[in-house]
Length: 200
Ligand SMILES: CC(C)(COP(=O)(O)OP(=O)(O)OC[C@H]1O[C@@H](n2cnc3c(N)ncnc32)[C@H](O)[C@@H]1OP(=O)(O)O)[C@@H](O)C(=O)NCCC(=O)NCCS
Image 1 (cartoon, rainbow, N blue to C red):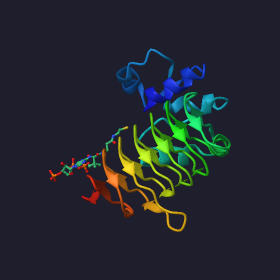
Image 2 (tube, helix red, strand yellow):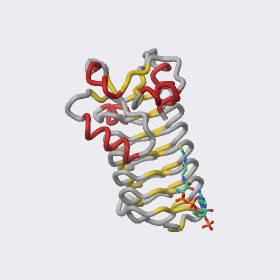
Image 3 (tube, helix red, strand yellow):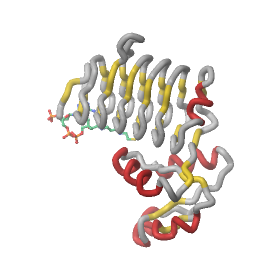
């Protein structure tokens, strides 16, 4: 995900600086761009940061660790499109990464440190809590509530809820790639298939 986050920065004419855990990781990642070590990160507090890590629990742990010391910003690809007042709603958050081709319609609330990967769609009146990851090509219909830390897999579809009762994907639940969710999903469970069934 770091490379994708870097691509968003370039699209915005920003020069990204990446962070490696240690020297070994710095060598392994093979970035030709500036890579600093984690131990030096507090020398860079003037820069805005995002956490370009797809795994929700790791992103949450890093956000917690640096919440007082680093300035987290949002990173929104210029090709993302937004319905009425939706861009402003996202700009009120922090640490949100929106990759190329994502579409938000309107009336959607978004928590901090969420990732919306390439070509995802989030429809009207959804509630997306913090630390959610919507993987590439996933399609979240209207009136869906994605609870904190849940993962919607690549190409998955979450069918719509209603104004009276949103379709709920529970806290830290995982929806497999290509799944079609037609019922609420329990917290901390894994769902896959069409229609999606609990597998773990
Ligand atoms: C659903 C998922 C989380 C399950 O991973 P896992 O816990 O390691 O599960 P396993 O690979 O052990 O598979 C368990 C069973 O589910 C099935 N299964 C796994 N993923 C599936 C999927 N996406 N759709 C349908 N069935 C799936 C496996 O065939 C296996 O079935 P079996 O027990 O009959 O052999 C994972 O396969 C997945 O789809 N992750 C999302 C990937 C993604 O979106 N990546 C985007 C990166 S940005």
